[in-house]
Image 1 (spheres, helix red, strand yellow):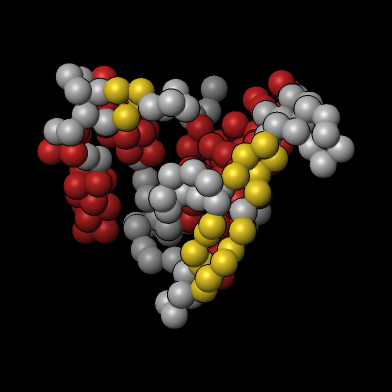
Image 2 (tube, rainbow, N blue to C red):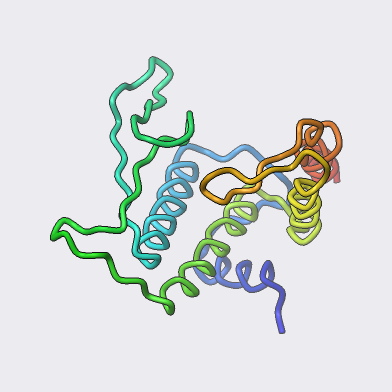
Length: 173
């Protein structure tokens, strides 16, 4: 069986999509494509779960960033509903949940490949270790059921420096 990364590389080769040899900054076209694919798959996944997502842009900043208005955590402001416009609960589609999860993996790992990042298994392990670090002393679960990081999590588990080191190592190769 192929690895996830090799399977996605095969798809990208067939689609004639660029796969740089080392990490490189993406151009505008690639950035917009990847953002569009990620958003499309995320919204499809929400629909499969029977959840409608509502987002309201209420301000565009001078740097082009859109400020989002909604009812959840700061900087992650979206509204969610399980009731459709007709007042009925939205349907859940188990097949589409599973398919959508793999589509999200495809788009996410494809994005890493598109910028020239290699060894996604090692990158995943760094993020896995960081996520498991949330279960140390001081961890807690919020009212939505999301596990929150303990106060000292960043100094012990922050994945960014390790990922940055991987990128620099790959760029130097």
